[in-house]
Length: 246
Ligand code: NDP
Image 1 (cartoon, rainbow, N blue to C red):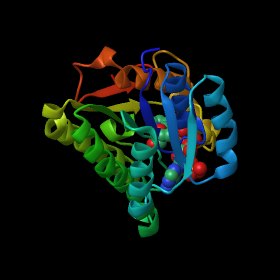
Image 2 (image 1 turned 180 degrees about the vertical axis):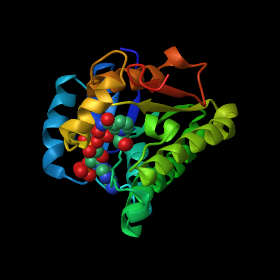
Image 3 (image 1 turned 90 degrees about the vertical axis):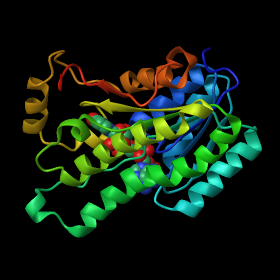
Image 4 (image 1 turned 30 degrees about the vertical axis):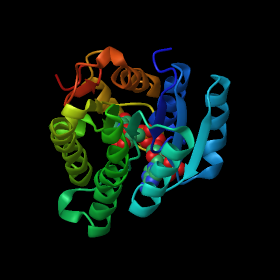
């Protein structure tokens, strides 16, 4: 129970990696607040968190809505008394070759994946800096490290998250607020299910461990970075990709 008495906020916790992170942090003892846009999808996640014996709260909130996210963050701190862990997980893809990329698809991905992190983190940081403790975990991607044809918007957003992580790690260190990123490789979720078989086979051929990860593989990395086991780690990008980009 590494996270007993801690309060965690996870964005995009209704499914996939975000839901797995909520459940894993709950199993380690943290009270969980998570957000998303789909209330129906939140119900099974709330039940799974409660089965771990901790409190679970869902807020319907879009990370691109700065005012709403500030409201959620402030409500969490008021209701639960602290905010110890933030996982910026919400993210989308709108893939196409750059030459054909629509401005809407560029803006949607940057707004959700990068500006969303700004919106939630600024409100949360005010609380953590005052508290003089906290762990912020940003979900980036190996695509943000290495790039990928057909994903210029996504790669830019995820590389932006890495720069932001390092800048904030330096700004917040004296107040004992740590900021790290996780860069997942290929994880079996709805995001990757929509890829054609050919793209999946190509990806698998590049993974030395020769299998796709489960959301729980990212959740265990998040639990480590959330806990005091990583108390001397800040400003880092933990790549969890089966060896794909080494
Ligand atoms: P999913 O598409 O399965 O889940 C995405 C989650 O984000 C959902 O809970 C969704 O909830 C939420 N979300 C999306 N847009 C918004 C928004 N505007 N406001 C609030 N919540 C939002 O994706 P994954 O679980 O696969 O991905 C999670 C994170 O991991 C993303 O940041 C992704 O880029 C990253 N990642 C994933 C990889 C993979 O292989 N799957 C690899 C590398 C990184 P709702 O629809 O209810 O709003």
